Length: 557
Image 1: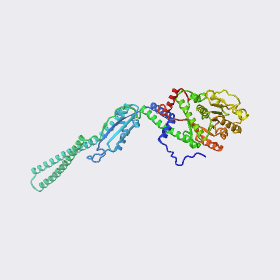
Image 2: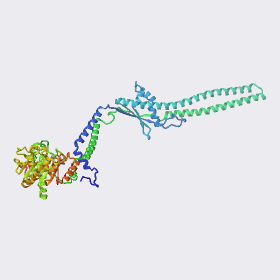
Image 3: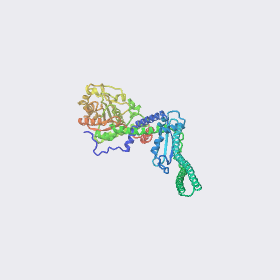
Image 4: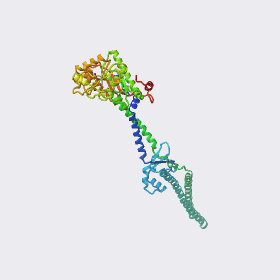
């Protein structure tokens, strides 16, 4: 039977899932944060600082471009922006700031912007030197404003000059007409004085009067035109004197005190925060993709059994040799105290199985090597013996025997392999300083350990142990490595499976379950080894209490 998740299972991530992922993979989070912060710092430190200075120009209406001198044209900001960015303005700006290079090169770092609801152009210039940035920005603003003002003044000046020219021409023509009129009047007086009255004299006088009337009409017309030009002249002069500037520098740029962009510290902090976010996401993905059997539910679903014990990770100094037998140590730190208490709780679970189901003989195994089955077997046997039970620990891992190294006892006889293969007498060594505990060592490595553990002779051994001791703990090879454990499991009351929460895959446990079901073995439960326990503050309070009590009593009872 393979493990299948429930159809209604909610696989959505919760806050506690993220917190757990960060806690379990905190080194990934810290590493990502430091890496991002370092890269951000290096980038910020290696970049060349640039400074941007900003000035602004206020635009007003201008007569330039209008066909009617009495009507002012509202500025088109987009058009004026292009004028400010033109080569002509660049040439004027370069002249103002005494720039000796190509004026067009100034346009590469120049930016002009505007808001549609205002009449203000903003001029920004970027340079590696803050003084240069301010100088060029002001140069362009001033050159453009001067250019636009010059055009407006020139428009009115041209109109004034035109009106004045027309007035001068009218004055000359009036003077000539006045002379012509005086000449006609003199001729009329001469005719009246010198000629005798008669039809000829009358005709001459009439002709002269008609000519004088025409001249007077011309003089009147010219005077009317002159008054119109005089009015236009006075109007243009008034407009020139009272006009609103068509462009003026609203704000001059000052050298910026800080470079563009984020400072090195802020950039580094930003990299750190980005690294934290990336690290958390990475940790969560690792956690979600992690198929190791980390929790009781994972193991229970995969093996179809309950978890009867949880063991913490041993310290580096207690992971090999006799130091791994933590049940034999006295005092020590909080981690050792927690480990001893965990084995005592496992002992209670095994005793409960015995009282309920008369479980006395059990195989202790795991899915794969190096998951802690031998150390668990040894410490469980010691704990049961310390609790007053008579215990036999059988080193049935004849391929890679470990119990002999852990206990360091003096071996005698043929051991388990001799008993099973040669029919020798069973040699059970009483472990020194541990009353009620006997060790059956593995003996010489046989060529067929699987066949020996599945033989009637091994069944006979189990029956003999049942009659002699209260518990028989049989340490066998991992299930997925050899068939030894499956062969031995048929003759005992049940199997304890040690699960390494840091390396055992749930797929491996599914295979273990399938193999045990095919062999007809009874699974008593699982033991979670190297469990990731949560800590409360700097110390787990319960762990500290046990450690304190053991220090006070000076005993492991």
